Image 1 (cartoon, rainbow, N blue to C red):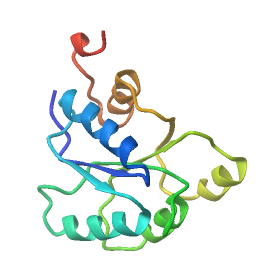
Image 2 (image 1 turned 135 degrees about the vertical axis):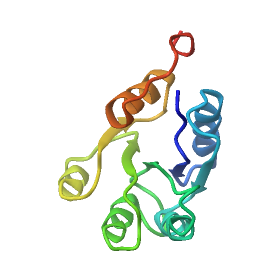
Image 3 (image 1 turned 90 degrees about the vertical axis):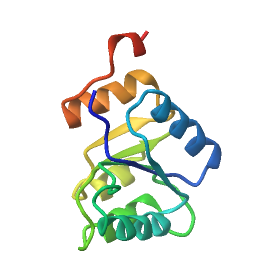
Image 4 (image 1 turned 120 degrees about the vertical axis):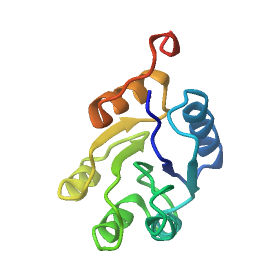
Length: 139
Protein backbone atom coordinates (compact mmCIF):
# COMPACT_ATOMS: atom_id res chain seq x y z
CA UNK A 1 0.00 0.00 0.00
CA UNK A 2 1.24 3.46 -0.85
CA UNK A 3 1.68 5.43 2.37
CA UNK A 4 0.18 8.85 3.02
CA UNK A 5 2.79 11.63 3.14
CA UNK A 6 1.82 12.54 6.69
CA UNK A 7 -1.22 12.73 8.95
CA UNK A 8 -2.07 15.61 11.26
CA UNK A 9 -3.75 14.60 14.55
CA UNK A 10 -5.59 17.48 16.22
CA UNK A 11 -6.90 16.62 19.70
CA UNK A 12 -6.43 18.14 23.15
CA UNK A 13 -6.07 14.69 24.73
CA UNK A 14 -2.41 13.55 24.58
CA UNK A 15 -3.38 9.93 25.27
CA UNK A 16 -5.78 9.87 22.31
CA UNK A 17 -3.11 11.42 20.08
CA UNK A 18 -0.53 8.87 21.25
CA UNK A 19 -2.83 5.87 20.72
CA UNK A 20 -3.99 7.06 17.30
CA UNK A 21 -0.40 7.80 16.24
CA UNK A 22 0.75 4.33 17.34
CA UNK A 23 -2.12 2.69 15.44
CA UNK A 24 -1.46 4.63 12.23
CA UNK A 25 2.30 3.98 12.36
CA UNK A 26 1.90 0.28 13.20
CA UNK A 27 -0.49 -0.17 10.27
CA UNK A 28 2.01 1.48 7.93
CA UNK A 29 -0.47 4.13 6.82
CA UNK A 30 2.21 6.83 7.13
CA UNK A 31 5.69 7.27 8.54
CA UNK A 32 4.96 10.75 9.89
CA UNK A 33 2.24 11.88 12.28
CA UNK A 34 2.15 15.54 13.18
CA UNK A 35 0.36 16.34 16.44
CA UNK A 36 -1.44 19.51 17.54
CA UNK A 37 -3.41 19.91 20.76
CA UNK A 38 -5.74 22.61 19.41
CA UNK A 39 -6.78 24.30 16.19
CA UNK A 40 -4.29 27.15 16.53
CA UNK A 41 -1.37 24.70 16.74
CA UNK A 42 -2.79 22.82 13.75
CA UNK A 43 -2.95 25.98 11.63
CA UNK A 44 0.67 26.75 12.52
CA UNK A 45 1.75 23.23 11.56
CA UNK A 46 -0.16 23.39 8.27
CA UNK A 47 1.41 26.76 7.45
CA UNK A 48 4.88 25.42 8.30
CA UNK A 49 4.47 22.25 6.25
CA UNK A 50 2.67 23.84 3.29
CA UNK A 51 6.08 25.22 2.29
CA UNK A 52 7.63 21.74 2.22
CA UNK A 53 5.24 19.52 0.31
CA UNK A 54 7.20 16.40 1.26
CA UNK A 55 5.60 16.48 4.74
CA UNK A 56 2.37 18.33 3.97
CA UNK A 57 -0.42 16.24 5.52
CA UNK A 58 -2.72 14.27 3.24
CA UNK A 59 -5.13 13.71 6.12
CA UNK A 60 -6.25 15.72 9.16
CA UNK A 61 -8.00 13.85 11.99
CA UNK A 62 -9.77 16.62 13.90
CA UNK A 63 -11.45 16.72 17.30
CA UNK A 64 -14.31 19.21 17.67
CA UNK A 65 -14.17 20.29 21.32
CA UNK A 66 -10.76 21.70 22.31
CA UNK A 67 -9.51 24.70 24.27
CA UNK A 68 -7.80 27.71 22.63
CA UNK A 69 -9.28 27.01 19.16
CA UNK A 70 -11.88 24.30 18.62
CA UNK A 71 -12.33 22.20 15.50
CA UNK A 72 -15.03 24.44 14.02
CA UNK A 73 -12.94 27.61 14.43
CA UNK A 74 -10.00 25.71 12.93
CA UNK A 75 -12.07 24.75 9.88
CA UNK A 76 -13.31 28.31 9.40
CA UNK A 77 -9.72 29.62 9.51
CA UNK A 78 -8.52 26.73 7.37
CA UNK A 79 -10.73 27.91 4.50
CA UNK A 80 -8.37 30.85 4.07
CA UNK A 81 -5.19 30.45 1.99
CA UNK A 82 -2.30 29.43 2.15
CA UNK A 83 -3.37 26.05 3.49
CA UNK A 84 -3.26 23.06 1.14
CA UNK A 85 -6.38 20.91 0.91
CA UNK A 86 -5.85 17.69 2.87
CA UNK A 87 -8.82 15.44 3.61
CA UNK A 88 -10.36 16.45 6.97
CA UNK A 89 -12.08 13.76 9.04
CA UNK A 90 -13.79 14.83 12.26
CA UNK A 91 -13.06 12.38 15.09
CA UNK A 92 -15.45 12.80 17.96
CA UNK A 93 -17.15 11.00 20.81
CA UNK A 94 -20.43 12.82 20.26
CA UNK A 95 -21.92 14.75 17.39
CA UNK A 96 -24.26 17.52 18.44
CA UNK A 97 -26.80 18.69 15.88
CA UNK A 98 -25.61 22.30 16.30
CA UNK A 99 -21.99 21.22 15.58
CA UNK A 100 -23.09 19.36 12.46
CA UNK A 101 -25.12 22.37 11.33
CA UNK A 102 -22.12 24.70 11.80
CA UNK A 103 -19.84 22.31 9.91
CA UNK A 104 -22.25 21.62 7.04
CA UNK A 105 -20.63 24.30 4.85
CA UNK A 106 -17.07 23.55 5.97
CA UNK A 107 -14.55 21.22 4.29
CA UNK A 108 -15.27 18.05 6.29
CA UNK A 109 -14.97 14.81 4.33
CA UNK A 110 -16.44 12.56 7.02
CA UNK A 111 -17.37 12.04 10.69
CA UNK A 112 -15.88 9.09 12.60
CA UNK A 113 -16.52 8.12 16.22
CA UNK A 114 -13.48 7.82 18.49
CA UNK A 115 -11.41 5.82 18.98
CA UNK A 116 -9.84 4.91 15.67
CA UNK A 117 -9.71 1.20 14.92
CA UNK A 118 -8.11 -0.79 12.12
CA UNK A 119 -11.49 -1.09 10.41
CA UNK A 120 -12.16 2.67 10.67
CA UNK A 121 -8.69 3.46 9.30
CA UNK A 122 -9.31 1.05 6.42
CA UNK A 123 -12.67 2.69 5.68
CA UNK A 124 -11.03 6.15 5.60
CA UNK A 125 -8.31 4.88 3.25
CA UNK A 126 -10.83 3.20 0.92
CA UNK A 127 -13.33 6.07 0.81
CA UNK A 128 -10.92 8.99 0.54
CA UNK A 129 -7.64 7.66 -0.87
CA UNK A 130 -8.65 4.59 -2.94
CA UNK A 131 -6.29 2.44 -0.85
CA UNK A 132 -6.79 -0.23 1.73
CA UNK A 133 -4.90 -2.10 4.39
CA UNK A 134 -3.58 -5.55 3.56
CA UNK A 135 -6.04 -8.28 4.60
CA UNK A 136 -3.71 -9.64 7.31
CA UNK A 137 -3.81 -6.26 9.09
CA UNK A 138 -7.59 -6.34 9.36
CA UNK A 139 -7.75 -9.62 11.28
